[in-house]
Image (cartoon, rainbow over all chains, first blue to last red; front, side, top):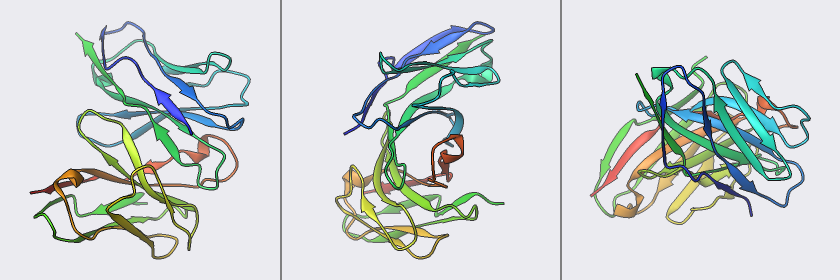
Length: 115
Length: 116
């Protein structure tokens, strides 16, 4: 069974500063993928970034980067130069190597960016 | 492209009533999924369909049934609604082939369901 743990229910960051959202995972599957999604107050789920278990380099997408530490089973999301529009719920999720690549989600971190 | 569409957006049911949530995708994706999201929680997988003609139970399947009508459509049915099924329901789809960022799941806008 897979498990995703997000230990920060809420985080605050000052506008223009960087913030790290923590995510640890547990799986016995050697092939897996790690995803981060953003859910603003409007409710939609927005894909941010992906890291594969065999990827050698940390993923980056614009202001988002994923700090992947395989031995520690962690996949932290780093948001640089925070903006007010980054205020949202952030979910870490993991897919397995099953035929449907179904996702297991963490409980989320509510990020608030302060002006 | 509309992406993933869900109907209805809102629904209020009385305990014991039945209803079907509809989901369709136009991205030629192989796999489709139904999740529920309860307040302050992450998404939990109800059922999924790896490909047309197959369906499997997820983490919380009790009280639900699904139908993969064709490659585009995946419906979720509540046969006898209970207050514990009050939630926001998301449908998603994915290519689900190989590994890579292209296996991201695309989500519909959600259905907010209240069972009285």
